[in-house]
Image 1 (spheres, rainbow, N blue to C red):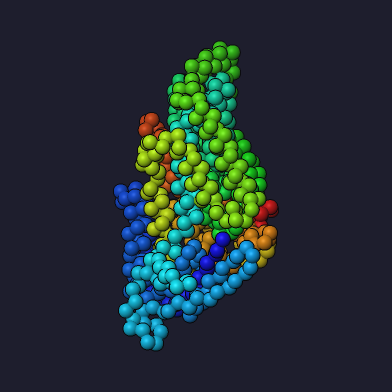
Image 2: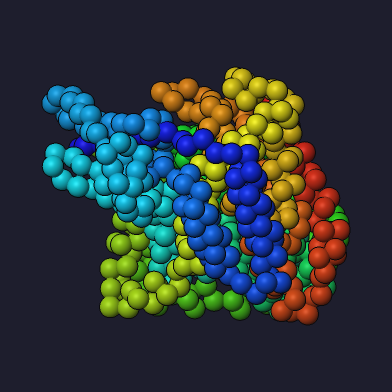
Length: 525
């Protein structure tokens, strides 16, 4: 197996150019926060800003045209590009000279194409558009593969079967239902994406409570479930996009992430459900007649309604267990397998699942959230340009002024607290994905301790992870899953305003953030 890495340096940029690109970044964040009012999809908004960023960068000549090719975006030496080839039997290091472009080197006419970068290896030319290296294709592969795998697995009826089984096991008791649906929401959010988990559990909640004549408790159930999707999103490395972005940057493995995050998720889930039961007055049934009537009503649910093929149902069950085990144990695989990455694992499992629907696979391709994938690619391009416009460097300088010592191990109590609360505050009013991407990039550039050769990562990475996820519980626009919860409320006649949601969610969100701060300071820094 050969590995090829390229290195170059960052061009010096004037303060006025950096300020201009900073305004572009602020514009992107504001437009994403106003997505609903603009009636525009995330991918379109980010795509327009990516186009503007690239055009401005080309005009200002700040992009590193002898840029990164083949999967890395670390640029450290401008004059030479070093290709390192590792062989199993012997180690060779070959240096490959790349001619400068744009008339930088004496004897050139300055007419090189600025869209592509030629790289010559053993007489072969490798070329790639300059914006391609900015995209983290590993993250894209994880999201695409996981989405396809979950969509096909859902078709087996497995998740609906689990949901109905849980409902019947509760015997229709409201308090037991709240705890059961809460636990199910957390687990589904950890395995599925948060939005899918909210749709499945939220839909079942509406049906169950209306059948049981408990519609007056629907608001409390849906609100608690919406908040718990973001708690469940902290359970594993692939539970939420910020986890994937920050976890990959910090080098945190799937198993390490789960072991470190699980205690917080467990405690916070229990606290959230206890608070929900008290604040929304959800109590157990008291009389024998009420219990018998509720049990009879939920017994009419049929968990087998969504199962078309028993064989595929059990096959999907086995595949889901295998998928989780392989992702969790990827670090234990041989190096030549491990380096394929989680993205490959997700795509491979999705491919195997699609064999069941090979003649109608295009239907699943249509259900993929292409808006999310397009948004990611455009966002990565914007962040890539901002790096070379020194915007991230400027934000990093500001961060260094606020934080005492980013490189310290363990990170200071004040630093972890400030970063966590700051990340939560920002993610409550804008998308947590660009926030996570930007902060992870800044921490990388400022050499925050990451996992290298068995070392332990800084608690600052965990501050970003917890803050980016939990900030979504402060407002209805803070995360997609809370927005879905509000949408379900409106659909069923429960009018909840922005201020109304904040008033009801604020006690929960503050408790979540306080618990997270204590947990990170005591155990993860």
